[in-house]
Image (tube, rainbow, N blue to C red):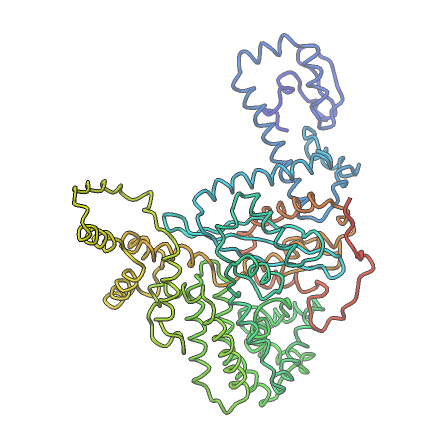
Length: 626
């Protein structure tokens, strides 16, 4: 602590050799080893009156000093808790005498908290986050969920993460993280459903407010949605990745095998990676070197092939890499593979973005179907891609949410050629049925409507009643009327492709109250569940060896022998705090290069398809909860 930061230095001065301090008032000498505790005790017990006088003369200085000290300790405690949450370290580590001595040397005034305090701090952080999130969710009327799960193969535990998407009354799209929790028992549809409803109740979200969820085709998640009569929107990135995964052409697989062998070698040897990067730099070749991607990376094989071709000169320029070169015929096959699959990889990358809309799924498939249909169908790779694309495309066209979403996007609605055999009249029927099932109430932020006119007294004749009923019915705006007006508006002025559909509906909310309500419901979902998938993408099953939580996300915590006795509550608190800490350093992660992240990821066990799968002896067969 600085001389200005402690009251001790108002009374004491250091010796020349810095081993002693002497009181300016009574000349008493004390040994000094960096701590001011002894000096403060001396001042408070011997010079009480003088201390009170100083405090009375400079109250602001002393208050600022006390507040600064308290704030500093609180910040240090916060950093320590986040370090414990992300570092895969036992809470008991703070009791290690060498660690305590280390902390004391750094800051003698800081009092290290214990394991129980860490647990309380974890819980407090979670409670504070939930409280703040509940306030943020006050404007939620209808929402879409994004969820995914991680199953520990040997840890006998399943984790599920949940995001909620909604559009507020000002037509602003919101995304909120609700938590990552462990499932009690097996990850059945019932247990997963209980977990999801419990998380929703923690944030005071009613299940009736949920329209549906975007997720992969997991049977337990689909079953939960079906049982609760909720819409299921298949993750677009996952659907596109399945097209590439099912691309089975022998000639291509043989070439990709050679590409994978190069990537595997680079992943095993840091010297080879260094040599390869130096050669690429000398040749002015930019971009990620051909390192293998995580096996769960959507479209990773295409990205690897692109990287291989970009760095082909580097491969040919290194003597001991000649075995990984391709013949002219093989290179032509790989180039054709990249040429035909790059649009799919680009579509996956777009679908993974957070600023997407579910309304873009059908146009995305339409563009890919048009692209592959224009290629030479005499080639097997084209035929396979066309069949797979058409199959997935038709699946999407059978999804009611995807259809209503593309209808609500003025950039695409009523475009010819988007729906194959489906007609826009079919979509209008879905929209009309959905809208008429809701009673639209005027927007609270719009100008108040004038009170209705008083009804004139009329006779009780049948004619009067008939005319009055017709007058009232024609004054009400129906979904059908709005649909007709909406189509006419798009014919005269369609918004540009770069515009936001929400801006259109914010402007026309009073003109189309029912359709704008529908837009708020169906446009809140993104194209994919990539945000949740990122939490589980870099799973590490070898415990302790790689203490890099931000790349292993949550898998490492439950795999670690030092963390597997956590109670369920503490585990859930730990996971949520780890996510919050990871979010704080998200900007730093974005600034790091792909090659730096690849170096950290590439050594992780279980990541490569060629790796031999075996159980590590240090990993328990089950997670034991205290």
